[in-house]
Image (cartoon, chains in turn cyan, brown):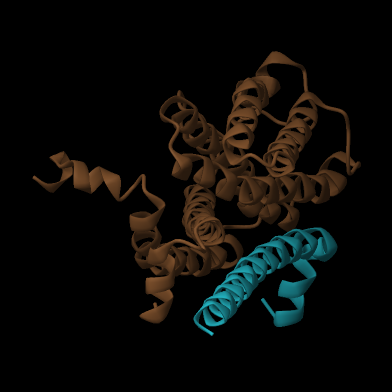
Length: 54
Length: 250
C-alpha cells in the first residue's frame, strides 16, 4: 500500500480523515484550554500574593 | 492497613489533600492514554483488515464507538459524583462532576460528528431523526444543561445541588440510548458488542476498538483531574495551603 493510497482511504478520505481530524482537534484544544487556564490562574494568584506582601 | 484509616479516605475528599495527589496521578493517565492511542491507531489503520462491505469507511468505527461509549460512561460517572455530593455534601464530588462534564460533552459531540460522517457513505445521509441519534443528541443537551446550570447559580452549594438533580433526572436517557436500537426499529445498527453474546466482528477490529476505548478513558481521567485541580485553585486561591504551595514552587 502506497502513502497516497493510504491517505485516499479507498475514496472515503473526507469521511475518515474528517472524523479523525476533528476528534484530534477537539482533544488538543481541550488540553490547551485547560493548561492555559492553569497558567492564568497561577499568574493571578502570584500577583495577588505579591500585592499582599507589598 | 492504610485504607482502613480515616486519613486515607480524607485525601480523596478534601481539596487540599487531593490537589497534590491528583497532580501525581495526571502524568500516569496521560502517558498511558498516549501509548494506548498510538497502538490503537496502528491497529485501526494497519492491522484491522478492510471491511468487505464498507471498504475503508468503516475505520471511523474505531473512534465512533469508543467515543459513544465514553459519552455514556462519563455521564454515569458524573452522576455518581453528583449523587455523592448530594448525599454527603462533599465539595470535591461536585467539583469532580463539574470537571467531567465538558469532556463528556466533547465525546458526545465526537460520537455524533463521526456517526454523521459514517452515515453519509453507508446510509446516504448525514443525519436522520432515528431513536439512537436523537437520544445521543439529547445526551449532548443534558451535558450542556448541567454545565450551564452549574455556572449560572452563584452560591456553590445551591449550584451543586441543582446541577446534581438535573444530572440524576437525565440518567434515564442512558438506558434509552443503549436499548434504543432494540426498542425501536432504527436505521442505526444494533450492538456488535454486547454482554450476552460474542462480538460479531474480526478479532483485530475488536482489539483496535478496545485499545481506543481505553485510550479515551485514560485521557478522560487525566483531563478531568487537570480540570478539577484548576477548580480547586480557583476556589481556594486565598487559602493558606495554596499560598504555601506556590511559595514552595510546586
